[in-house]
Length: 203
Image (cartoon, rainbow, N blue to C red; front, side, top):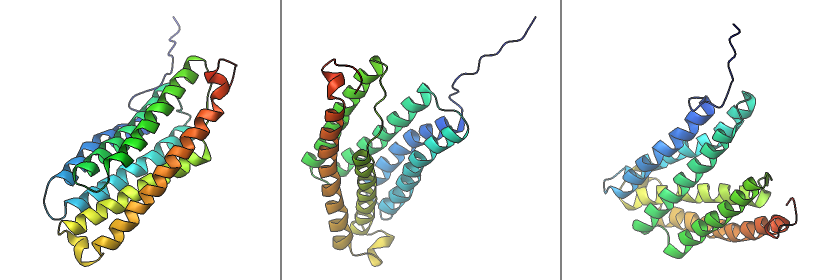
């Protein structure tokens, strides 16, 4: 009898484990941000940077090892949204960001996710666009700066090294840029998918 094994996507592949790690680190960042103790902001910054770095690594690892799969794509997209959404909401709680800004970013993600689900149902792949990648980079960088500003504001180690106001202002305006890119990239994405939305074939 011939032993036939069918290779499929494994939850325990390195790329998927990186996505799982990103999800697992999200509540750690949130807890460090919300707990009022000196140094929590700096710890949150380091954990956030590690979590964000896994976003860069998992796709490269999957492609290098030939482990790209629907499960991997799902894990990557889900982990990204969990990390960004979770930490942004916590930032509203500690008054690092206004509600309108976070709401704009999250609403954009809901809209784009809806378009992606429609595309997936029609077996159409809509590739990531340059504006979307720029939005992601600006958002992650702005969030990292705000975590450092929070550490300085709460008497953490960065208080003596970095002026809270300067780094906080830099982080806030970077998030303003990210919010602008969020809106523009959403419009660009929907325009690119418009033929699909209208039922006229591939986007």
